[in-house]
Image: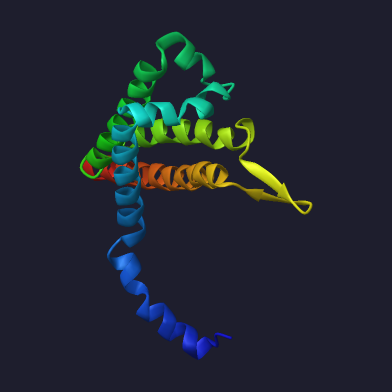
Length: 168
């Protein structure tokens, strides 16, 4: 149990997290690395082939591979992820650009999160209890990506507002 006397010490000892802006820096850095890595991987044959079951079962983007083909479609998805990562990085210096990057990731992560429901074999039943498979857990991480993107959008928005007020 945390008492009032202990909580003030706890609050003081954790102030560095806010002082160093760690939630923003770690969130932004993590999503940038993930987007660059995943985007680059989707531009490889194994990366493109790996997302076929996800894309073909999605009511939102199944048309994408039918229209463009697996490899070109995957290249476009990968390029979109890389562009979003670059825009989010630029957001450090130009918050409105970061907002555009996070709008892209919000759309991406919303679509990929829905694949948890639309893709077969993401949840298995063991003794009457539903569990996420490795594929399900892989897709579930996109809910975390969505949450991080919403946080980054809010932070970039606040930075843009402060910059506008400062310039007026």
